[in-house]
Image (spheres, rainbow, N blue to C red):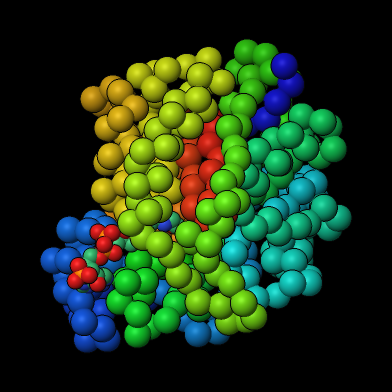
Length: 319
Ligand code: UT7
């Protein structure tokens, strides 16, 4: 089967680190509560003038350089984001302009925190159909723009950053085999307001935290298992698991229920980066590959979920 695979990754995080101690000065919270309930210790916050496109372009430039491709080779650029300010030109088109990508199809995709895995599947399907040979698939968010900094239930959770995967079409044989498994995706629109960014600019992030927590830990393990099954694997075959980085307790509960091998690598970037929405999966994946923790060729489950309520996940081969 012709398909596509990830050939390179890249990520970018703003330099400003916001600690729990600093948040104690802003709202009625404390380091112990934040660590115990969320696992978060720090998060990165973009500079006031720094945009989603700035962060996406920084990460994309690194991924493109690592891939060895030329800008003109890229036929599709997509940015998964729910925090970009500009409607047109799209964030993807702004990234293409900065990187000198001359004529790719460029579009943004908003599926909340499930955005990156949704964009990855969309790009994979496009490459399988022969409509492009190489794609930049980006998750980038400036969630700090959407926070009410006086609301302790939300302002401690989120952060900013970007992660990118370069996707290339494969013949589907031998070393060049397809590296993106079939996607499992969907939504429960009847619960659309359980995670919200509603109203005119600037909307404020809000959610029913407990009910989303219960949904993620009770209904989503079966979906994650289905993504493995559709790739012809069981969770015990995985070398790594990179879920949406919303809460360390969700990550521990979800992965515990899958029946993974003891030596499986589980992304826990939420501790350092907070919840970066659609950026969290590619950011965590890129960091694990860069640090050498995830070896090339490992089957890795990517699994994202959130606003919508939506989910998307697939098993990919680590570049
Ligand atoms: O990325 C999109 C998808 N979203 C998710 O996956 C998020 C899922 N939900 C969660 O991660 C958790 O529900 C939260 C981290 C958002 C909240 O944790 P929780 O354990 O569900 O806390 P809670 O909302 O039930 O609040 C418990 C208590 C409340 O006080 P009372 O009513 O018991 O007196 C809150 O007012 O903790 C209080 N509280 C805080 N206390 C100190 C809420 N925020 C804070 C805070 N510091 N920052």
